[in-house]
Length: 202
Image (cartoon, rainbow, N blue to C red; front, top):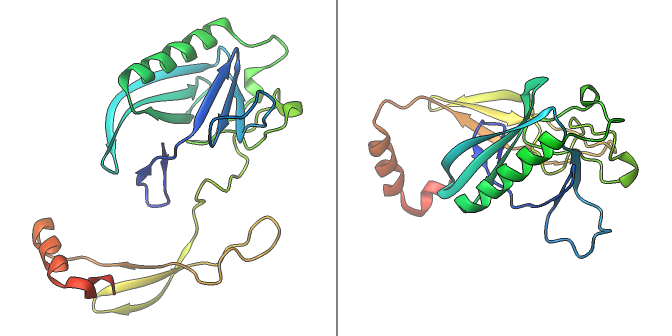
């Protein structure tokens, strides 16, 4: 479960494998044990799991639980399951893994977490060096907005052009956002928009 730049939650389907102390994430069911994960992390005594109960996200019901690092409660990974039994099994497995502790040569103070994302490293040579701050194409990074006009009481913003790690422009057509205040109830505003018909897409 992640948040976009506007603070709205959304979900991405992922396949997780917890093998002893190694948590791996895949975009689909792995074909073999040797398949490199999209992300991986080490579970140890610094990791805790918290049951958040049921939430509705984009009209889908999820049973939410959160992994967090006791050394920094702001660093956490929010997960959701479609069934309560599935969520309960994951919570129990994570709890047991943290109680057993990780190998002694791994210090929890060296690991970092990034909110709602796993490490971008997929190499087995980096399993003992987890960095939760690596960028990921799955995560929408915050971008600055610049105002370029005002029309009918709406302030118009455009997204500043960003560049990827290779120095190339990610998008030659920046997103545009309009912000304004409307004096009316949400129901009245909704009915007005629906009354516009196909032209409301403009």
